[in-house]
Amino acid sequence: MPSSASLPSTASGPAVSSDPSDRRRWFALAIVMTAAFMDLVDVTIVNIAIPSIRQDTGASFSSIQWITAGYALAFAAGLITGGRLGDIYGRKRLFLIGIGGFTLASALCGFAANPEMLVASRILQGGTAALMVPQVLSIVHATFPAHERGKVFGLFGAIVGLGAVSGPLLGALLTEWNIAGLEWRPIFLINLPVGIAGLILGRKFITESKAPKALRLDLIGVALVTLGLLMLIYPLTRGRELGWPLWGYASMIGSLLVFLVLVVFEREKARKDGSPLVELSLFRVKSFAAGIAVQLTFGIGLGIFFLVWTLYMQMGLGWSALRAGTTGVPFSIAVSFAAGISVQKLVPRFGRKVLQAGALLMIVGLLVYIWESDRYGMGITSWQMALPLVVMGIGMGLIVAPLTDAVLSEVPKEHSGSASGLINTVQQMGNALGLGLVSVVFFGSIGDRLAPQQVGPAFAEAFQHSLWWVAGVLALIFLVMFALPARPRQHVEGGGDDVDTAAGAAGDGSPAAVDRSVHAAGEPEPVAADEPEPGKEPALTP
Image (cartoon, rainbow, N blue to C red; front, side):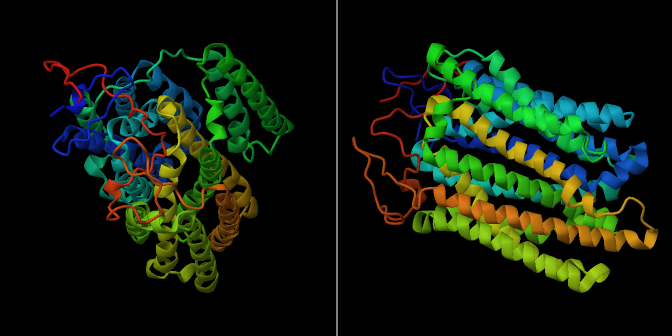
C-alpha cells in the first residue's frame, strides 16, 4: 500500500492516499491540531492572568493592552504572508519553522524581566504563529482525500471551540497553583514541551506539500497588507488611552485607501505573473466571499466578548482567577459538543440553517446573560451563569465547524495556503477590531474616577452594555449568512463523474461517503509529498 509520506505527483496532478491502513496522516493531523490548539489557548490564556501580571510586573494599563492586542496585531499582519510562504517553500517546512519560533517566543514571554520585554515577546509570538497557523488547514487539505475532510473539519471545529474557551481555565489553574513561585509565567512556559514534541514529531510524520506551480513572494503586497492592518488596528488599540487624537481617525480612513491600492496592485500582479499575495479570484467564489464576511464579523463579536467577560468576573465581581476560569467550563463543553455534531450530522441535513440557528442561539444566550446580570447584580453566581453560557456555547459550536468547511470547500487546491491565510487573517483582524472596540463599548461607559464601592456595579453595567453590542454583531452575522449556499453541494467519490445528491441522502449517510469539497470531476487531489521521508523510496500510486 502507498505511504502518505511519499506520494509523488502524477502527470495529471498529485495524489493523496486514502488507504485506511495508512496511519501517518492521522499522526500528522494530531500534530497540527495540537499546534492549532496551542495557538488558540495562547490567545485566551493571557486574559485570565492579567491581574497577576499587573501585580508582579507593575505593568501599566497600556502595557496590559499591548500584551493582549500585540499578539493579535502581529498575528493578523503576518497570516496572509505565512500562507503564501507555505505555498511557495513547503507547508511542512513553514509549519516547523513557525512552531519552533513560537516555542522560543513562549520561553521569552515566560522569562520576561519587565513589561516591555513581555510585550515584545508577545509580538514575536504572534508573528511566528502567523507562520505556523495557516499551514494547519493547508496540510489537512493536502493530506486527506476529499471524502474524509468533512469529518476532519468537524474535529478541527471542535478543537477551535475547545481551545478558545479552555484557555481561561488552564490559565486560572496555572496561575492559582503558582508553580515554583513563578505565578503567571507557567501560562507561557507550558508551551515549551508541547512545542518541542510538535517539532520532533512533525518532522517525522507530516507530508511536505506546496503549490504545484512555481510562485514568488509578493513583497509589495506584503508591505501593503501589513501597512493597511497597522493603520487600522493601531489607532483602535491605543485610541482611548491617547484621548482619540485626530491622527488616529486619519490613519483609520487612510487604511481604506491602502487596501484599495492593494486590490489594484494585486489584480495587476495576477495578470502579469500569476503570483499575487492575495488571490482576488477567490472572492468570486460565493461561498468563500460570504464565509470571509462572516469570519470577520464573528471575530469582532468574540474579540469583544471574551475580554469583557474576563474583566467583568475578575475586576468587577472580584472573583479569583480559578473561579472565573471554572465558570467557563459549561461553555467549553457546549462548544465542543455542538462543533462535533454540526458538520457530520446537522449540516448535511439542514444546510445553512444550522449556522443561522447558531447565531440566533448565541443572541438568546447573550440576552439571558444580560437579564441575569441585571437581576442578580453583584450576587450573581457561577451556576446562574451556566444557562446562558451553555446556550451561547451550543450556538458557537454550530458556527465554527461548518463555517471552516464552507469557506474552503470550493477553493482551488493550489491556493489553499493563501485561502487559509485569508480566513485566519480576517478572523484575527476581527478579534483585533473587537479588542479595539472594547475601549468604546466597555471602558467608554465606565467613569475615569470611581470610588471602590462603585467599581463593581460600574463594571457590571459596562458588561451588559458590551453584550448588547455583541448581540448586534451576531444579528448582522445572521443576515450575512443568507449569502451562503442554502444547502451544501455534496458529491460521492468514485467513477469519473461527481454525483449531486440531496443533502442528507448520500449513501448510508456516513460522512466518509460524502465529498464536501465541490471540486470539478476528475480534478486531482491536493498537493502531496514531493520530498520522500529519509530512507523511504517514493511509493507509486495506481
